[in-house]
Image (cartoon, rainbow, N blue to C red):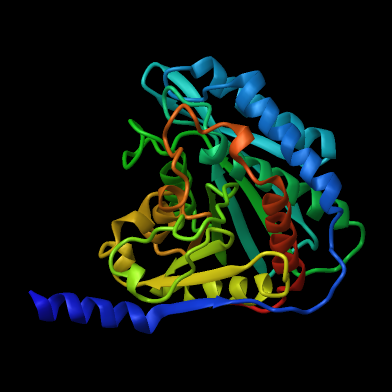
Length: 328
């Protein structure tokens, strides 16, 4: 038993990269103040105006889908619904695509689920991710003014991820990944945003699953994490290198073997649906319940979020998409 634990620990050491910061001075690529305000507006709309977005409130799921769709229409980006049946009503993944050239070589998905756990308004889980997704789309659409990036980004907002849909065929990401696999959709990388708005800065407030707590990871929860499987190492590395260009947002990366099954906590979101279909995929996260004590609770409200942190994540994503030119 002791040898088993030791070998598991050593295996993870090989694939863990400790956080690296850079002190380089640079101008922000985006208007951080305005982006922060817009993120706040999205959270107010999703968690206050709409509120709970669970399977118990299908009318609110519909309102959320309409809100996301209206956003893309307002910025002038193409958008469509991909409906599917859940029990006795219809839900829909919302899809928009921003392409800089007619036949791009690099095709990415930036995904996030828009439902919440029953009884919660889900500010961090997962309205924070939807807000970052939308503002990243806004920034890229504004840049698509003749710039010749060899790039297309598809923004997919998944209808259902939380229980009781979790790990069933009704998960929005499973519905999309299965369709993509059947249609042989070219996807160079799927980037899943999962809980990206919570920070903590008291020593010891950041926790880790076994055995990661033994490898010198930060005690403060002020960084963003990038998690990928072995098949997604090139995507993980490309994101990590791009994110390091933003000195205002510390970043760490983690590569897990065997599809994440040895560390089940890293499979608890929509990226795993794409792993299971053979696509390169990563999860970008604030580490969820390893940092946020309000996880899946009614106290997961927008007043707990760090909107400046979220705005810097939008900037890091823009840096990645606009600086990436080669195949992964």
